[in-house]
Image (cartoon, rainbow, N blue to C red; front, side):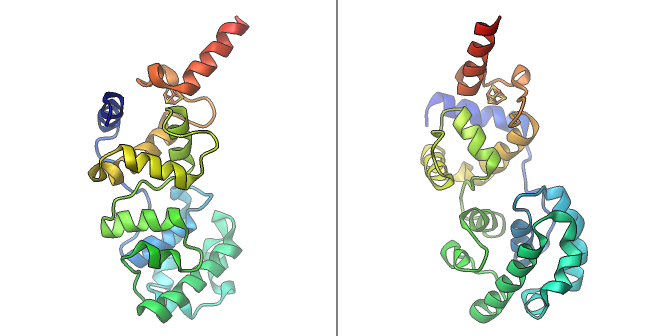
Length: 217
Ligand code: SF4
């Protein structure tokens, strides 16, 4: 790990000393459902719908018996609710049929479940089973590219592989949350708060936008 990589960890540790998952859940099954529901919406909006959903359907056995029309009204406010309702039921049926209703502790097995991709399996594996991973969402991808850890054309899988190679395994889960928080609170997609960021000296985005501003003035 280079000095600049260590500096990034130190900076994020100062900014976000206690990072963690913002989704609310109490079992691996609820965690998996919440992470699936969080696709293309905010964790806060997922947290508003999951209490009623989990009260009505506390496990995979209960949810596997539901109809899409039962689930839709409970998650309507989060968008893509029809597809997400179908996925939740398909996922629950597969958990019942293949894993006795439990979430498998193996990421490859998780990825064979309907609607579960690399990002979801990485997040659930890290949160529920402590499996090291740097799941790449929109924030992790943007920050990684701006800081030069990834190319603009890199896929989430390529970014994940690069980050996991650079940073020690014991930092992966924590770093994943910290980069997400940094992307949400400082390094926004539009108008990042560079004036309060300590990474300007090494940031491609900052250098590029500064040189554009310099040419205009
Ligand atoms: S300098 Fe700006 S764009 Fe670069 S990492 Fe910091 S906040 Fe993000």
